[in-house]
Length: 241
Ligand SMILES: [Zn+2]
Image (tube, rainbow, N blue to C red; front, top):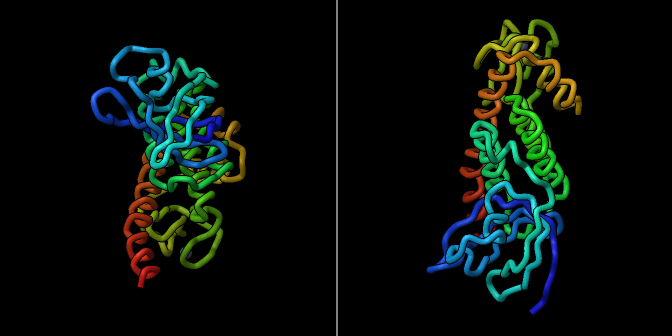
């Protein structure tokens, strides 16, 4: 059996048989990996507690015929605030679910790995509700579907941009308006996140705008994930015909 080591984030885990768990990890160099952790439900071990969702680990695996087996794990980044604060942990859970849904087993995505580990560490340091929208906007950019924010998606004017329509993929001017209203401050914050000025946005955005963007980004990612879920079976069918 081949042995390998990799860094990874635990996305989720579930029970297997009487005593084991299957750990779903998003790893740095092997993409999403499912691995069995043997005996972790029988005893309360440090090893078992390191395999909880949102843990960032360095782990050792044996390559199995079907599933790999995780045999050792060390915590790489300790996230104390994230574990003790329910609202931060809730946001982390959303991030993990998004990554789980957009990745396939074995699909290596270094940029996504960096984004996820960075966002979890930021969430641990910073309870700001904007951490999640910043993560979502960057995910959408990685997926090639970032919203258009600097001109109207319908008529392309850059003036009087007052609405955003998630279904149309961006902002709209007063004449074309659809979807929901968006303030200049909220639009500028989203644009700054896309331009990589996340730190500035986290420090300068007011709480009300942050909460607006949090709810808007949740709907953006939902729509994107639904679209992916709807479209993938069609693609598969097409490929197998
Ligand atoms: Zn327009």
